Image (cartoon, rainbow, N blue to C red; front, top):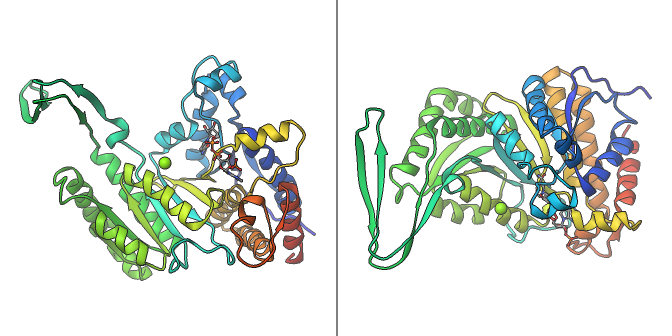
Length: 402
Ligand code: NAP
Ligand code: MG
């Protein structure tokens, strides 16, 4: 059989621990036998990040900007314990944060849905995608503890030294106070990424904030979205038969729970952080959550939502077989390959991505799955297998279709 051709390389970002082990097996078992796989390889494994002073992470982000599509393995975000474990020169920043900042992107997370594992919410029939604004607000806030008698003020100093002031609170007892910000440019990028992704994936877009309370702050989010929608996307949405609407977050929560799914819910940074955990848990498993970073000018980085699965890796190092679920990592590859196929006009490549995803889903739906899913399976006795066993079953299923 002739291998499927690629023309532009995918930017490949390797990672750490158990997901690094799976990464190699996925390539060997499911990709290289069928594809003339072209990648530009960046090793974001922690030892190389340390050796290059994290240069490798910045270079990989530049490569995604250049080629347009990247696929990333989960990576360790170092903390004090990791500095010790890996004898690091520095506590390097989160690679995801670095890449997100370089691409000015928005993160979209969606669950992989299979028949036989029902969402906790019975009426959800299609995946719900969360779009999380990944800049500012409480994540870039400044905070103080205040003592009794202290007065908190908000001061804006102009370029000419002029001041605008508001009293936040005069503390009659101890308390806390915080200052937060966001930028029009970042909110606008967030909006464009959301509208673009809705068109790409042919899904309606919902956006919610608390603008009844934060009239200026959240009100600006609402206005920027509406202005950009009216000027740049309204006609395209109409043509595609899609809707965009804004609603108060309280209303959004109620509607999401009663919905059938199948839309994108855009959230501010904190709301997206919390709601994406709620959605992924309600759909079943973190191991089934896909994630893609989309920049406003249409650059894509695909990855799994979960981490490097450290606990399983330590077992693997002891020579034990693990049953780590490779689904979200496989879907990161298929997402990236499909997008590469679309951008390069290679329908065979996109079709391969579809077939591989379908083979994964059929494998699970026929009862063969990793342990994390076996406990959620509703259709009789599951065939719980190791990671290698699962990849072999997917490969057999894929070969049937070729
Ligand atoms: P994690 O790697 O997502 O794993 C947490 C637990 O979730 C695992 O111990 C496992 O539970 C379960 N799990 C996650 N993915 C699974 C899969 N594919 N198959 C089966 N079970 C799965 O999170 P963590 O342990 O908090 O973090 C580990 C490392 O990952 C950290 O160094 C962190 O910095 C990094 N991280 C990276 C990213 C990223 O690169 N995007 C994201 C998050 C975390 P059981 O042990 O109960 O089986
Ligand atoms: Mg969170």
